[in-house]
Amino acid sequence: MTKISELENEGDVYEIEGIVIDVEEPKEVVVKSSGEKVKVQHIIVVDEGTVEPKLTISLWRDDVGKYKIGDKIKVKGVFERFRGGYYFSKLVS
Image (cartoon, rainbow, N blue to C red; front, side):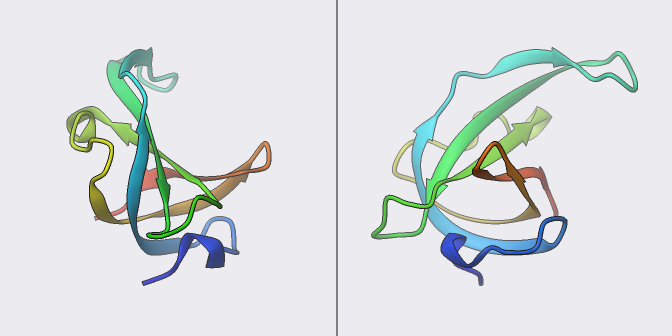
């Protein structure tokens, strides 16, 4: 298990455990490659007992609506940095 504060290599897969501190409203987007309309939602997660750094996780399709503020979650995803932030844009099973 990796702490959010220990995430380093973009493109690597990490498993983190954290607390959800914010949940955005779901929105519908069009997937460029297929033209399919799908729901996406972003949640913000931190290491338990901290407020920084924050990790934004993009939830797609069936994962939308799974989490609420205060939930303790454990997920595996592909790490990226974007505009100074930490992101999991793709969750891995």
